[in-house]
Length: 195
Image (cartoon, rainbow, N blue to C red):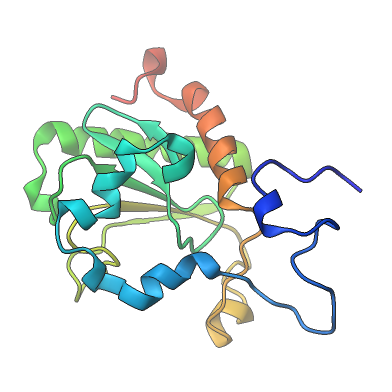
């Protein structure tokens, strides 16, 4: 049996399986409980904003793959697909019109680099890029602007997410973070910059 990747030990048993096999397939998502319990109401200030708190913790703990001057890139804790990244300004602003030229340029450059990195590590055939603005616009955390970079593959919109409203993610967040962070420097712009 292959060795368990680092970070997987907390979610697997001695046999490397999540639970005892039986006739049912289960998708374990205990990390979603905090969001399910509180949702949009949990972000009431910069002190309770996960995007404001993330840069103050380790990259591994916050799932950060790159830190820029005005913005940073981290994995989405609730990914649509493996490798779903978020590009966030450090400033706690809710709207795209609130960021300045330097932040706008860096968010754009980081988005381009994120696409190059994801092509290198997971070979997606397409991407969804976007910012959901405001609660009505579908933003999960409307108080802090963030750009989604979602890698897409043919068939990833099969019956499971469409009919069962369930998404199977094939890698742990820790493994994806390590792969993307390791590939970031070689995919960045000239001289390793993102600008």
